[in-house]
Length: 81
Image 1 (cartoon, one colour):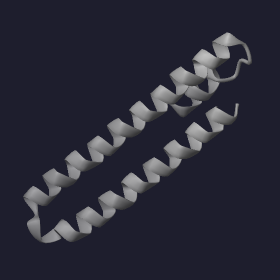
Image 2 (cartoon, rainbow, N blue to C red; image 1 turned 135 degrees about the horizontal axis):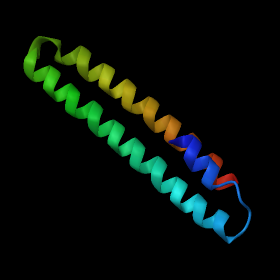
Image 3 (cartoon, one colour; image 1 turned 60 degrees about the vertical axis):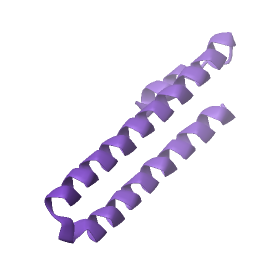
């Protein structure tokens, strides 16, 4: 998805500006869906094994932070273009 967003941002004309906006929207949408999936899976896992809740929560937060990091990098790269 990030490759598609970067491809949209390649042009320097008016279409490039629109491509940057579309690309940023796709990156944010993908990150939101990914973090939502992580949260949903973590809640399901904690409901099945409450004693592993601490470990699952920690892994969920690390995964969400990594997704946010990639999202910020992609947005900065597109904005600099």
